[in-house]
Image (cartoon, rainbow, N blue to C red; front, side, top):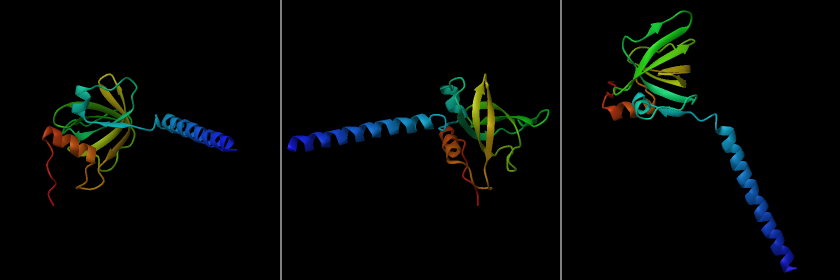
Length: 147
């Protein structure tokens, strides 16, 4: 009788472990397209993204770089003080988007141009995304907001 209980206990533990491994694998498979890593322009210069890789690019919109094209296409440069990345976006920009303002875009690289499919801008006068602040601090460009 003890032997049968022991076998059942081992079987239950093996099935539980197998279910845990399968569910972990399924969660990882489902999330593979939903994870977008943040990169600053300087990080992209050091370690360029793979072709077709979706990621987030953040920094400050370079002064004098915003150009409105035909239709809703806008091009501009993003910098963190160490490197500059040209960006192309087709769509409606957030109201608070502007030169020398923090932004984060999600998209892919096409050659040397970052093609954004989403642009986020700061939502008030003093807010800047943490990733952008960290990247600017690394380059020694970040200035604390004045109250």
